[in-house]
Image (cartoon, rainbow, N blue to C red; front, side, top):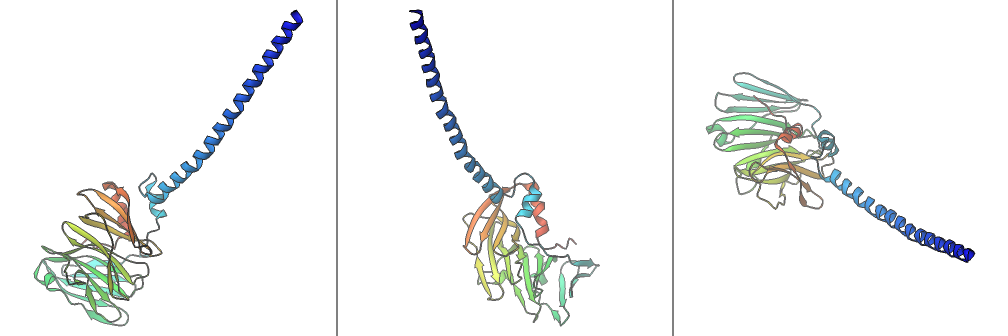
Length: 283
């Protein structure tokens, strides 16, 4: 009897041990399988955040990752009581001013000297130069002028023939103000925002084909502070106010003709984009 009992006990212990081993292996396999399916999801999510959002930690690195186009060098700007001089490469602009307005503007390059027509709004109102930007091709010069009680006027001079285009009057509707503008890397297109004190619309003007294209948008933009092109000229980013005192970064893809909201921009982040904007005169 003792031998039989011992034998039964041994058989019982072996059975329990085998059952326990059989249950533990699938558990380990399930845990490993679950971990393997979750990792790609987390990786994809992280990649999406890095690509889409420019307002993560290490902001400076993220701004560079967007590869915004920046002019290669700055212009030399000098001013006296009645004159402002702007020089870059072989191009110079001289604006003769009074205490209240701009009396004349002359633009000179290596081939010619041009007297720029000054619109009536500038002649009869207080006005001052705010920024000047040479296109990367060197063919066009954009002159931005603030006019009291009117808004910002943007004049673009063709440096090959001296003709000028007032961007506020490209269509039958006269735009009250140009909020922001910037040249494409190739220099034949200018992105700008137009409207009044409570509305802003983004457009691109193609100087080669003399066509203006209004970008699609799905929200009521109040104001636009900055416009940036990527280095390839295929995308336009801009920072606009909507709603009041809330700023967002939007991205337009020219090939797909699509616009999407990228991220909210905090007030203390805004100055980081100023280096991509046309050089201000700060006079």
